[in-house]
Length: 432
Image (cartoon, rainbow, N blue to C red):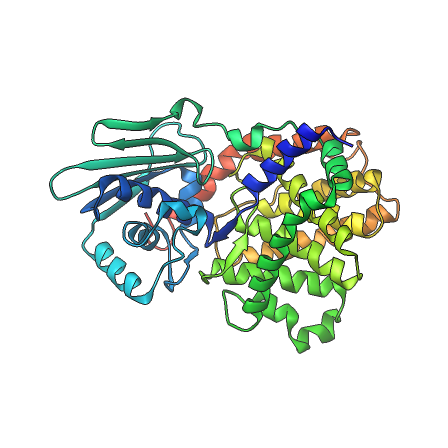
């Protein structure tokens, strides 16, 4: 068993990275930053300047904002400046009402909000908000490195907080040294009472999927897979249920439904994909509560481990990482040991590497269903003794090196892809 001190560090890490969120985390983080600037200013701002990294802009352009029926950054920023409370973190807009939305629209219509790209190298996750009142007083707030990580706060010229020297790092994730073996040992050996908290992810994310089944959200991928007509094609199987529940929760979230989900590493979709495949498969297989808990911990901690070297935002779709986590959890529920989980991970990386992230949007639920489908196949292959070998592609004999190969591609190799994606997104249909 891992030393108690190490277990406590990992538990603290999971509790920082696996948190409730309402709405897509990029526009919500912009709303959070705006709310903090407003609170420092002490009144509703007369004007707001919002400067963002390219990855934040990419993920905030086409996604629904909870409780508004609208998409994009302007309404998120306007609500952050009115009803947003920074104490709520990624649930900053949970007090939204129809009246608040109508008032926020008026702020947009009077052109009080100016949104643009931050010049220079600010890292992949950067949000800067400068709020000003009618008398010329200003307040500045900067989030960097993590969706709730404030690195700079100022009231006029009075600097309240300044830790910008570390704005390009993600200290919360980098503070614990993980390996695939450590992830496995922690998930399998930790006292159950220390890790039972992960069941809250099951409650929140399953409730989101079930609510989605009752409505019409996004492209309705989950409902489509859940309906009787599609069951005639795919069957009423654990595989089809895993796909339908996972995509349904994403449908609702991307459409802007005011439904909380449990996120992972700053992404609600990653939290959904790391949770629901494991939960639904566990229920279908009548797994014990202990097996479910350990499978969920294995899934979520695998995601956190991979994101340590990938970073929170990249050109690599987050479903690749999250589905790899759930694949590991499913493999364990199938009776897999550490070696089988390693094989599952290699199978996932051999298949899904290269899936691009072209922003948060309703069709993300389709990507999640693709990732989860691959997760099931990868786990089944591993249980049958099939594993992609080191003579194939980017797979290495060492699993940790294989993961580093994946994250090196997503973090560094796809930078030009990231720029091209944003350029395409911002120059279509009259967007600038």
